[in-house]
Length: 276
Image (cartoon, rainbow, N blue to C red):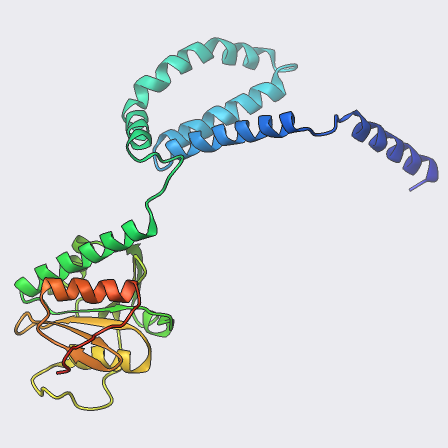
């Protein structure tokens, strides 16, 4: 680059930077408020069809702004169509707009999110509800809850799900005849991460010889790490839980809820429990 051209470029750059006013508190607050408004609008319309509409409107505005000085016919079309578009938007997207505003008013979507404790209690409620249903219908099930030790190698043996924990999802997975019902479900936090997983069996025989492969797998996986495994017997509908290679049977809803609460809020699990 010639010296004179470099000098001209530097002079123009310095002049451009010098024309920008120095930032102050008012400018920062102004930018922050505009950013919060845009963020709030996007949060309100999140997961609705109105998001596509907003993208289209932004695109049209940008194109119209760029073409304002040259494309006369296009500019005329946008100018004359804008009032009609503004009237049509509430009519066409009335259901989406109503749902978005209801969600904003009901949950305070812009300012708050469900607390971790609320999410955990909802997960426990859904799991207990699913296990009660499976036990009542004598549908075999094996659910493993990941602790601090990862279970990724066992997840790879099944099918990835990555869905929120719900009673309907769990009972559907274990419904007899489905391709995943014989394997284990692995839960990480509030997500069903994988289903149809293959687990290692217990290294020693169980004290009750009538217990089948699900119970041996539940004990086997908990011998190797800090996971919690819960089993529903297909023959009897009895709910059992395994931790640290120990198995506790004949769990009712109250004890099951307490065990899950202890797992999600670690203190001292299985105090006073008797092994099988």
